[in-house]
Image 1: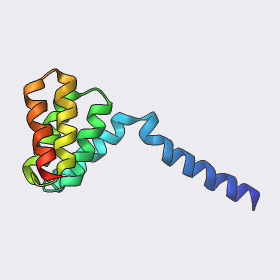
Image 2 (image 1 turned 180 degrees about the horizontal axis):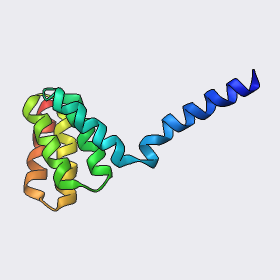
Image 3 (image 1 turned 135 degrees about the horizontal axis):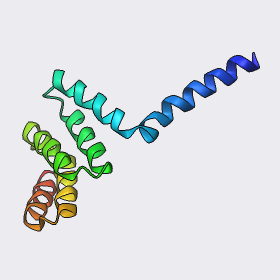
Image 4 (image 1 turned 45 degrees about the horizontal axis):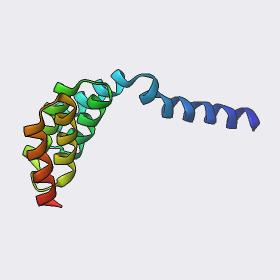
Length: 105
């Protein structure tokens, strides 16, 4: 019984740690999912966030532009896009994205 619980705990920890240890693997997995679900707003926002955390800011901006194109009425995508544009030093686009986020809030 204790061995089975230890194995379950180990599997759980490995599954939870995979995105942290192998972020590029998670990015590839989400990318492949989005190929088959191109209209998945939440998927594009999540993908953009993963790319931003991996410091792939240009790719993150592209993913988030896709998200806000799909659902311009949701502020979360605009806010994250504004954050990425800020990091990229594009204050004009960042300001516009934040303004659109405020309009949709």
